[in-house]
Length: 497
Image 1 (spheres, one colour):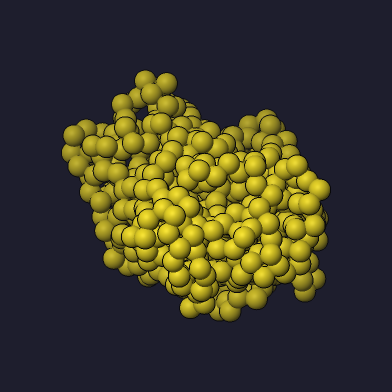
Image 2: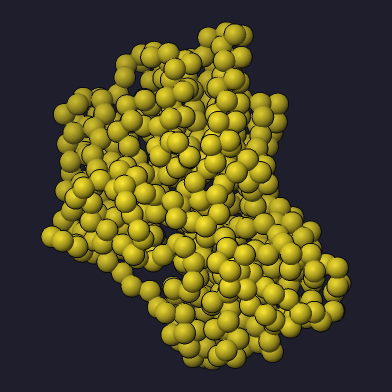
């Protein structure tokens, strides 16, 4: 049995200010760089990515693995036409060459599900279409998905099975890759296609309300698990949607896979009915930055663990550039003590710190490359690194990170900032520890993240406050200038009902 393994991951924000080009797939902060067939297995095997689980599952089944191409770029604006065409061409070429060497019994793809490319709004649907065109109608295709996937009917039609992660923060990526591969192997061995049932839900869920660690989403996942335990049901692929993609497929969707069409329909209908019944539960609010900082300062006075401020709207994991300075300015204005902001993505400022050296005091125009609003600071350079480390947290353990020249600077008596040259969401304590900051010893941790930070930072925190400072990953997607969503889609849960 020969199984081809490859991947092409990107989460695309239609309104983010910076596009995603070829270079971003070559130098992604916090993830391996683009891998070709010769290096794919060695590079991905030790990571926590879906392909690592797929590799283990294929090897456990005694399959021969045919490596293709794998890449990922941090979330940002839509993928350029050049990058999309080059990467899909590489993937398809490797697959074509593999077919020259012998039959392929199945294909596993590590996809995201919320990629938008110039010319292809449903970019994963297009990737699957091209792969299907090469292998033909009879070779099974399985894929793992990020649950922020905007799952479409075309994706469901072109793949034999799709398996999203169950968690947000995504601590089960390798599990999903392994699960998808196990179902692929079942499909190969039985020669029988799974019945499928695709459904869409007609309201968007804000990113800050999608965390599976707490209700209401944790309760939805419990319901999903109970439905999947039913007789003859193989997978209930529940995708929360990425509410920043301006195309008709944006939003919450489900595809159920089962032995019979009746079982698939029943599982999909039941989960959608549950979601519709609990729609109002997904409304949520965040604090304005000034209120959040004031509350954090007050809470920190009597706490023996850090207070976390989540800078959700400049989340590099949702399309932000990680360089807006609104929250930082508020920390300085309110004279927060014992605060560390992680991070500001500003290669020019990082380079200036390295040129000045540790101990130097320099003037910086910090951040603001994406929104044109930098912050002038007098900075003391406390620590310099090359930005290389290995992630250690529950979500990214084993993943290599390369943030380029990085610096720890002090910008007021009580506020320090981690400045990096490549963006990465603040989801792993190693970003701080590699530069000499012990997260648990701080009074306030200001993190550019919406939810992923919770996996590694919530266990050491005394409180978590989600705040809205400037950035494109808006807490309320209804404020975005959508023009291409499908009719009837509610931009806020419970709106217009």
